[in-house]
Image 1 (tube, one colour):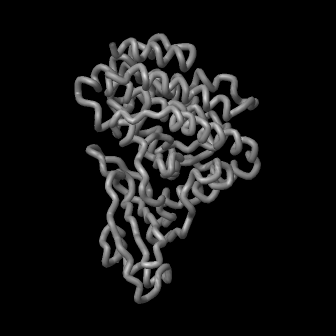
Image 2: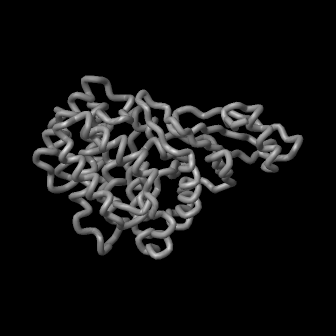
Image 3: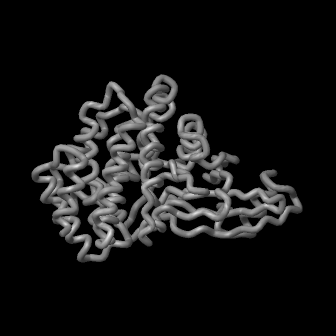
Length: 338
């Protein structure tokens, strides 16, 4: 029988049978909502220890067909074990166990009270300290991974999950849906495949950040790979700029946050031999992701149809004359929204 960790009785029996809890232990179980690619469950043990278990889905929970091998959960486990060695202390949950047969990963739960950063931002709770932490965290990961290139390249050189969960649904699919952007996107796909510079998280966004005791905690590493750091920048800047679009009264504040994020990232990154061209590629990835989030397989749920149309047209106009820098991109994108 295939394990479904969202079934509490089956999960508890599994944890007992595998020796992860005592035979007579009765933990509390709560299904967590929000993920499209995994089943996610909180487990509270009588001892007070709390875990989060994730089980990868083969068919993702989105409106269009989107498939990816459940084996990616083990890429996430691998990423978690390595990121704790190179990211700032306290910025990741602790690993507990993984199960290859059932595609399960367990990690320590972040204690309550905590909040999801995306949820905070959508309520207008925008704090520059959080933005600066966001930039420092990514810059530190990119820099420290580059310094350990010899050890990390053999471990993370496979990019199959990045292909199936990012390049195809975000760029290839969008290119087919928006012919006016196809040349831009197909060229970017080729350039991204050719760039192998450092460890790339691949899902670096506010939805994968918890705020606990004023510290940011990074989650969800299933598309981590050795590749182009500009993708992480474009993917993450897209979320700040899309919220600048959606929350019009705070448009200037979110634009300033995007600029602060970029500057803080650069400070944390420091001088590296592959920085030439990084900003230009980050501009292109930001435009590509801004379009993908309104026309790709995984669209931003908080943008209504009129906002999606506006964002699409703004991005297409910028693709025709690509801004030379991140600050110029931020300024020109927000101007077109007005």
